[in-house]
Structures are given as structure tokens and as C-alpha cells.
Amino acid sequence: MAALYLFLLFYCTLLTFGQRYQPTWDSLESRPLPDWYDEAKLGIFMHWGVFSVPSYNAVWFWNNWKNGNRDIVNFMKRNYRPDFTYADFAADFKAEFYDPKRWAAILEASGAKYVVLVSKHHEGFTNWPSNYSWNWNSYDVGPHRDLVGELADAIRNTTNLRFGLYHSLFEWYNPLYLRDKANNFTTQDFVKFKSMPELYELVNRYKPEVVWSDGAWEAPDTYWTSKEFLAWLYNDSPVKDTVVTNDRWGKGDICHHGGYFTCTDKYLPTTLQKRKFENAMTIDKNHWGFRRNARIEDFFSARELIATFAQTVSCGGNMLMNVGPTSYGTIQPVYEERLLQFGKWMRINGEAIYSSKPWTVQQDNATRTCWYTMKKTETATNVYAIVLDWSDTNYLYLNAPITSSSTLITMLGFQDYNFSYSKVQPSGVNITLPNISFSKIPSTDAWVFKMTDISN
Image (cartoon, rainbow, N blue to C red; front, side):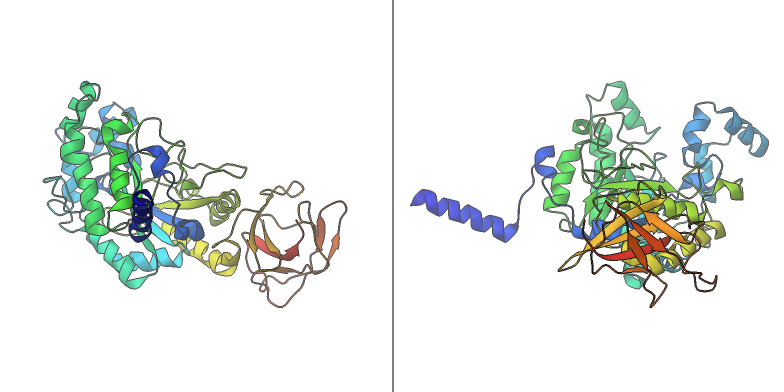
């Protein structure tokens, strides 16, 4: 009886307080991913920091300069005094035009459901008044503002987006880190007195629902005490029920351990993935931060971004699309335009994206520029074919779908029209394409055909 009583007490405790996760990967990875993240599909990344001041060669400017990059060395010789240091850039990080409510409105208009702001990149400068980054934060120098807190408030007070934060575990030139590194990471002074205290501070103060870790690749997760942090995050933090995390928690962890996988920057598989992943994708083709010397051809078009997004979602992923704000606190028109173009497409075609699931087929074998998503109804399955190239003929052949006697085919945004089609044996469908006037076509970038009651 005593044993039964103890078992029932333990069981009731679990029901009352929920599962307690242990600081092991087996335990941490048993936690289900909160539903909101998979349903969201699209987030916006924002790389903003002292690197936005030189705005040349983007976010790795300091490291590349220190390592003798000839282009950057010459840039500095031409434009700055000989004794100019990277720290001197911070005074010009003024963010004088920073309007977080305007940012929030632009981000929401993009169709995204969450935002991830860089709170601290590898340079170590914190975009909030951290107690662990004296005189190297946005309140003590530069803007003299809490950049993180202001955007968090604007997002939560004026939009329905989820707010997340990127945080670099390491700092290129922090003396504590360099000393730990010289000791082959047998000491942990940087972790104990800098990196982890500020990460706990971030979560407790701003309650981010995405904790996007980076900068962990030189040392194992045992050095970073990452698993202990994640156990606290999932068990006791103020966001324990809704927070999601990525896979950059220590050397060798990426694409193997953590929450969802990122694997590499711009990770874009062509097949369905077993684990939820995120494609961290740039709008600038080659850089994460704002660049004053960028040309228009350096940016992906809305059509290219939508094509990448369709492939990402079809294979089971989310896309985190990056914007690089200026040091003076604005989102440049080319970035704003891309976000608004994306949002316009999402308003028409969001049914095929939000809360969708991967279908049994991702890419159509006949029409290689077609990617599928699906949603189940109570009685059948609706499949969405995201077509990236309009057919040159008056029909569209898709190899994958098997239609039923009750299948209807429509185009999202093209109201009250059922497309005629013919079934192809053993599988596939020929969709007849009518002449559609330019003013009635719902998009010029990609088109979504909705097929109800598909058999496969």
C-alpha cells in the first residue's frame, strides 16, 4: 500500500506541476515543441549593433579587420584617423530615428508571426542596459536607450507577433573568454561572470519566446553550461511553457542537439526533414547587416524569397528572414519593400502556409517549380500546390496529386472559380488554365492551387 501511495503521489505531482526536464539532451529533447512555432512558419531576423555604424562588410567587420582583411584595412585608412578603434564606432551608434512602433507595424505587415532581434552579437555590445556589460551597452554609450526593451514593448502592445532574441554566447575579444580559451576551456570565468548571467538576465527581463543562441562553436556545451540553462528555461523561467530554442549550444551540437535545428545559415533541404528546422535566410544575398555600399542587385527579389520560403515550408521548416537596420534606427526602403511585398503575397496565400503540414510529396516531379503543403479536414485532405512558374501552355500538369470524384481545384485569391481538370493515370492531374486578365491574377510571384479531397 505504501508503494502504491508513493506512486500516486508522484503521479499527481507530475500532473500538478508538469514534467521536470533534466540537464541531459535525452531529457531536454523530450520536450514537445510549442505548437505556435510550427504554425507560424515565418519570422523576421534583425541584425543590429555597433557593426551597423561602419556598415561595411557587415556584422563580422571587427573580426575581419583584426585579422587583416585588406579591403577593410584600406577602408579604415581612407576614412578614419590612424588610432581609431572599433570601440570608437559605438559613439556613433545613435539610433536617433529609431521608432519601435513603426518597426513593429512593418514587421507585422510582412506576414511574419515572430521576430528575433539580435540582443548581442560576437562583438559583445549589448542592445540593452545589461548589468554584465559595463560601458559596452546601448544605454551607457551610443543611443542611451534600451533598444531591446523598447521593441519588446512595441511588439507586444501593438501587434500579435511573438518576440524573440538572438544572443551570442561568445565574444571575439573579451579577455575572460580569451583566457578560458587559452586554458583549453578548463576554466569557465567568462561563462560564470559574463555570458550566462546576461542570458538569464535577458530571459527574466524581456521574456523572449525564442532564444536564438549562437557563437558556441569553439567550446563544448559542458563549458557553456548550456544544458543547465535549458533545463531552467523549460522548467522555471517565465517563458517555460511557450519558449522555443535552436541548436547552437556548443561545439558539435548544431544539427544534432537542441530545440529546432538550424544546421547552417540558409539551410534549405529539398526533402522532408525528420526534425523541425529553421532556414535563417538573408534579404541581402551575402550579408546579415546593413551595408552603405550595397547595390540593388545585391538583394534577393520578392519572387526569389517566396520561392525559398515555399521550399522551406514544404520540407517542414520555418523561415527566419533577415533585415539589417541602420545605425540611425531605420529600416531601409529596400528591406521595407521586400517585407511589404512578402506580406501582400501572404495575405492572399496564407491559407497554404499558416498551420499547414508537409504533404507526402514535397516537390512535384513533373513541374519542378512546384512545392506542396497540406491541411487535413474532418473527412479528407486538402493539398496546396505552390507554383513558382506560370505555364506557357493552357494547362498545368502536376504529377503527384491523385484526385477523387469530389475534388475541386481553385486558386487562392482568384475567387469563385473552379478550375476544370482531367485525371491522369496512374497519377497526376492536368489543370486547364483559362485566360486571366492581369488585373485579376492574384500574384505575379507565385500562385497557389488548392485541391480538395485529394486521395493520396
